[in-house]
Length: 354
Image (tube, rainbow, N blue to C red; front, side):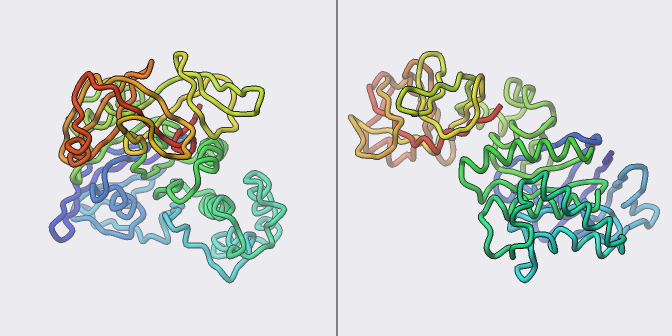
């Protein structure tokens, strides 16, 4: 279990984190905008950055207690860290990358080989485990990086935007694999993301960070349905999040039926699912929009909510979808409440998760 709180000032930025605790086998998603301090939290926990004050305890071992002069070096913290760019060794194979941390701990060769094979089989990369990482797909590289991070059985797993570089179909699969790997290893995990969809799909707890401070922390349901901070409300109110049923028609086209509205999606899931569509992915037009996108609906504008960057335009198409439109586009299209408009978005913009 991780127990922590710390404060650090870096140039003109102050990071002030109150209690941030994660139980074994559980995942905390740390979400926020760019520059909010998400990745800095991981660097403090891992020991890359030394804060001015604070305390970090992992499985009963004090890693940081500056009042008592305790600061455990990064290499001695037993923390797995998966960087956003994966940081794999390009001259090594998958197996060699995964074995690297085990060899550094001077584990017996037989145990190393057994652990590497176990993880490769679990991640579905055993058939390419002797390939160099430069020849791998994005999903294979992500699985390799995750396997390398958990191979030494760390006391804490830190993941920095692990799904950001993947396509939609691979993201869906990796969400499931991430959750399964964390549960099976029994590791407390913190995942940094700017995607509320990823946070909802993989976490037990969500902590929202804004301008260097944790402004809210709770279950996914509490964060979305009972927002207690203006920053949270701004994305929760305009988040297109629904429950629906996956349907495949006689042509093999995949939809998610949400309250009678059939939304084209790219998914291998079946049954009842959650659907998320980022407002920025939705295009609003007067009349039919010239696009290859499969999702095109006509509806009426029911609300317009202006923020610093966008105006969130709510359109009733049988369900209400919010689109993020620039102020210039609002003026160019002369949009107002009650207008009939067309909304368009790609099937790959529809995030599907359990």
